[in-house]
Length: 137
Image (cartoon, rainbow, N blue to C red):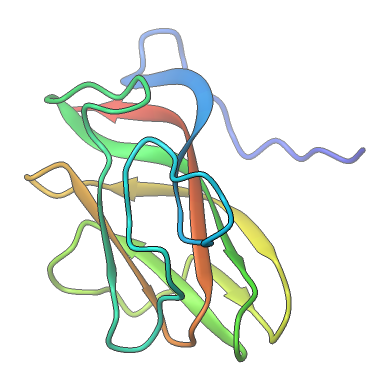
């Protein structure tokens, strides 16, 4: 076991840890998670939009961002995933993968005013995410 510390939050911070739980999983043979999504690979023009507030310990309002573990699995080609608050997609990726890999990564993502995040993959891949905390406004 190897663990790296990325940082910490003071007890007076706006970060609120929650018990880790699956938000969604796009693989057909796996359980949905807290939010139902279309069970398919996402990539290219097919963006995944997911409501992440009012589920799995994240409140309905007062949420600026969520702390996630996002995984790309069973990709058809090499590519990347970007997680963002919907709208204009940023130019940076949150995780990168090659054909056949399963790659998880910690992501802190801002949420849209509607409480949603969008996931864009440039190559077809299954996506899943677990939430482990949220950041208040």
